[in-house]
Image 1 (cartoon, one colour):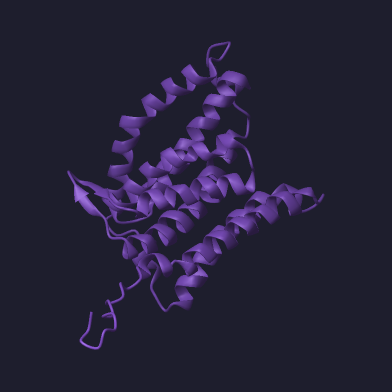
Image 2: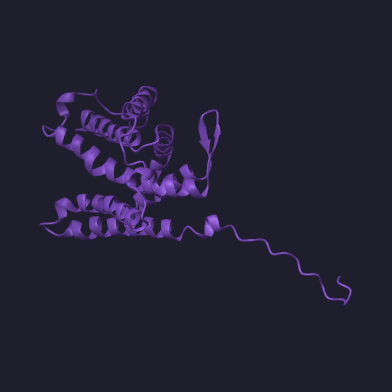
Length: 235
């Protein structure tokens, strides 16, 4: 108590502006996710535009982050959109593939229990077109939005700390949660939330390599192998 009997004022604890200042990131994420939802579920029903609804959705993922970064007066290089030390990024991606892809194939066979042996003859004749689309139309735009824009912004707000070479912090798990939620918003199937787990590895590749090249290559190859396994077993 103060001499005059009034309670002493306690210093107020300043709010954690790192969390309160996430408005831009949340708006970009929701805007892109809802825009993709409108494209897939809305434009996808139209006869002429429908076949290209997925491309429209991914174009939103690509252009909105570029526009926001440009509006902030920043360089896209600072968001991992560059080819500096590209060979290093590719080497990191290939090393991750060698470690994880055999486990992925084994897990696919265990989970789906295909009734017949894999056969490359079951792959569609235009599978190369599907493969290119997985890199350019799917992995590239999604990595620009999530590992490029969102993870970079979150890493600035919540800097990670290295633990035996592994960055520990909020940026990668929060980005992965947004990645999973975004997939679920566009197509509300619970299985879509499972992309949270490979997204953690995409985020690590972004941190280890310093660019988007490694996660784009790894992400696209994951999708291509998944498609190849699906068609090879069930096509």
